[in-house]
Image (cartoon, rainbow, N blue to C red; front, side, top):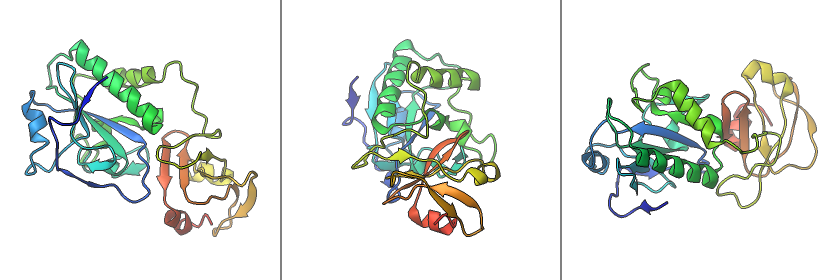
Length: 250
């Protein structure tokens, strides 16, 4: 797989929030034609961009480096998280409604997505269609077009075919970490009230009984620098230490 990072370079980006892990993908269609759609996302006047765009001929072009915050998701909420530009990578497919997806383009999308999953350890639950995250107002976006939800979910599952199921209670290395992080158990009693909160980080090696500021008994594993919340339905997200303190978790 070859990625062209020279032909199209967009300046429509900014920095991701500090300590924000990259752990999600959003799949788009440009609803335009090649190569004016790539040029559109490189035009400062448009204030839109993406990290990658895939041409009908299967060319993969990097417009914004993944470490930067491209402007692709807009006002967004999905899987219990908002502001998807902060932590996701955007992939645009050069395509318009009613057009066929060329096989070579579909193969390039598959290869790129698999590579990003491996590089950033992206969980299956955090790969989303643009229309799923563009919820304000409802129906604001319809892309990727000509790809219904059931087929899209089947494609996501195919990306993980043959892989061991992700267990949030097992070790899980995060991109950019200088050592291995672990997902630990926690907040059993709060699980039913808050749809599942789990902690993770550098574990002390045992679970410690804990009573939070609201008087809820729970167990948790102390951390040195990073917290994760795990939602059994919606996937994994990061949370800053300040958020943990604000929530009364410690």
